[in-house]
Length: 383
Ligand code: GLA
Image (tube, rainbow, N blue to C red; front, side, top):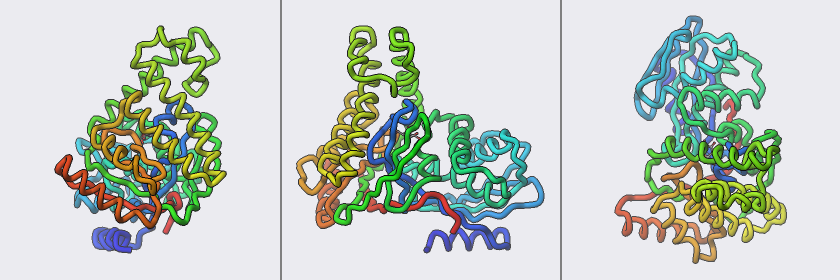
């Protein structure tokens, strides 16, 4: 495969030795958006777009990183580093930082990476960097860290080093993803269950708005604190509530006049989204894609009107698909404010619908959108 070959070739040119190769995928999320940090449920899958790492341990304490796609290098000393002024190195330095904090004995390393996960498209290239490097370092230094601890470590590095208070979904699916399966994760207990996603006649299509979600991290942290604010007030009457996971719609209705309309709407979306996810899993087990898809449309409406993390371009893309019978479901995906919509589309109609959508978007917004046909794949692995 071209990208792995390029990563490998660059590595051998730079370091003149044989590397270990690790593949770390992006992800989609079928339903359950902005529920992970509310201790609810999510239904993601790892995909066939990935970052590839070529890596070897060093005997000294130097860490040499090369980002092939950016043709940019950074190096730092394993015990003497600070956040980089550039963005990309921080996803990786943060992982080293967490490993050190957890007391793991690592030395320096040489690393080249590159991939085809579009950046800023909401496919979680950041978690692919974090969890991929954590996995790779665990492997080359024989650290013996179990999968779940790798997930937590990668998430913590994003929370503490990059400064985004993300939930656990992206890093979790990156490590636990399985070919042809979506994964329901209970983000409180971290129990999980695979559901086969084996609809031979249906494709998962992503329409990329190419609107880079620059607002995403600040607004993301804001949504998180709005949810916490809601929980704090609900707790005063229902002390057993520790997160929105514990709140039912009936319970929430009692706070209609006490919560501001913004906080009420944020909470309402999350509470309903958890219910939708359970209905979606039932629909999946019954092979009922129609019901599954209609839940996706409902999710989009909630994300757009109540949670307010959509944007004009995403809303337009979803709107376009609504009247097309070969589209089962469509919604914005990930943190929001740009990036992609995820669509379940009959194989036979993919080309025609994609062409139509790209054309209409160009007419309305001027810029070129992009279509990705993705396949569900394994999580991070040695190749
Ligand atoms: C980002 C975060 C995830 C999750 C989604 C929204 O991808 O990294 O933890 O909160 O947004 O569902």
